[in-house]
Length: 279
Length: 347
Image (cartoon, rainbow over all chains, first blue to last red; front, side, top):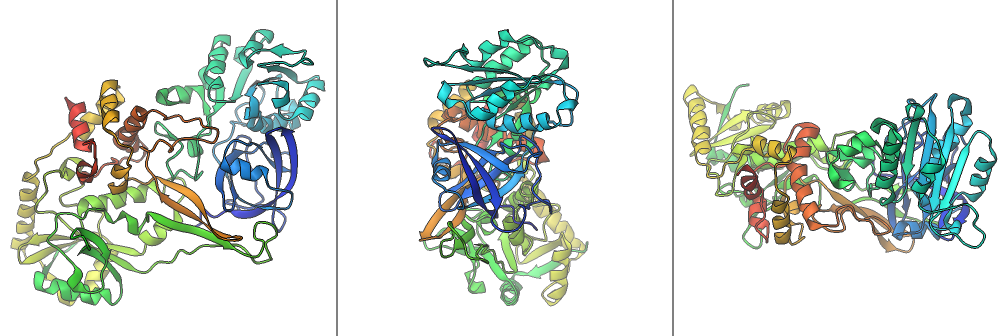
């Protein structure tokens, strides 16, 4: 029987500062060529899945993988908001972490081929979406339009700034960025992310939408998407719960009869609607 | 399978013999006079005229505090030397739980199902698979017992290794598994085959016990009303006022499985990851980094607790999250308890 709580050892390969309180960590196995876990192969994951990362002595917490499985590096992007995240922010290159996973269902990558894909992200919520965005961009010809709506509190808090510039330069990506409060230099949209909806035209029959952001944002975005005409089963959101064990045992992430760590963290609006008012 | 008889005067010699090969966990009198499950040092420790122990024997499979792994090494978190790794302390002995009540054993059957969903919990199953259960059915249900309504007692029809029924000077012995059969065969000189009259006596004893229940609730009706949202929010509000967030109901519950994972630093570059019991009634249970808490309101937590046990768990794997042991009735400071809540909903 496999020990489902035992992490494998890894190390921080690289640290990239995104904002004053967000860093992207590239992870590598401590020794050997690749991470292995439940599968006896190099760690392979689906965009939208998550890892349980340990900082030994502080604890363990779940983080969405922010890199794409089509890329070489395994990355997580973390905002410094609690004890484990804060301990991670203090780690330097070469230091040891523990890793379990990948866990969760991930995005429905098989179902969305040939469709327009609309992303709506808020703040650090762009991290899991980035995994899917880069996955799709690496398989660009399999998809139609790619529309990314991204909002943050202010220009400084936009994450993946270099990558945003890259996406903006591409002719086959439609990127719209907004901030709640601009500064002197900000020339783009000011307002919450839903204000970007009026600036795009989406054919609801041809589109899937993926939403990730702070809990307060999600219901408003879903409401907007439903108004555009997207069907409930074509709208997906990452729900945020404290998935302590990641394997459906500890109970912390349950919503209705579902476990966010097993049945999610990606849920269609159709599923969420049935999960009572708890979300 | 054939049924057997164990004379009461042979019970202690049997336990003494079993104790040579197994660790025996049985009801014993604790220091404060309560009856508790504990490993015995002698067969004379065992108390068999008890109603039920104050805690179910859940902790022998899912301990209240448990080290999952530990780490140690010069500069472990900086540059661990080759070979340095995480140490798992999990070791078990072959064990027999003697005298477990059918309701509590049903709690174990529930945990078996839960801890095998999607991924097997290796800590639980390593202990579980090394344990044999000898049940003692209940001739005298107590005031708060409602296992008959829950379908988990006072006697079980299957699932156990061995089940004993008290026939005054003898125990009627039923075998429910291969493990149980092998044990009886190995110690067959303590047993003799049950007669037809004794078989009938056993059936009568079970029937009599079933007639003695004072508490009766309808699990299906309650679940249906809850699923159809026919329960007024005011009920949960009223219960929330009574709830003291103590977690006692979870700790005494044979089916509560939630846990927390925490790290304990035991020295420089040395520490352990532990799991400890947790409770969905605690306000920090769903709180996340950054402060967002989906079940901040006590009302939502209390409601969640009952929906989980009575609606969601039957949906997930066909078993109620309540075995009718009645412990939450006597434990809750605010007199919130399962049968009381169910009666409110049934009204």
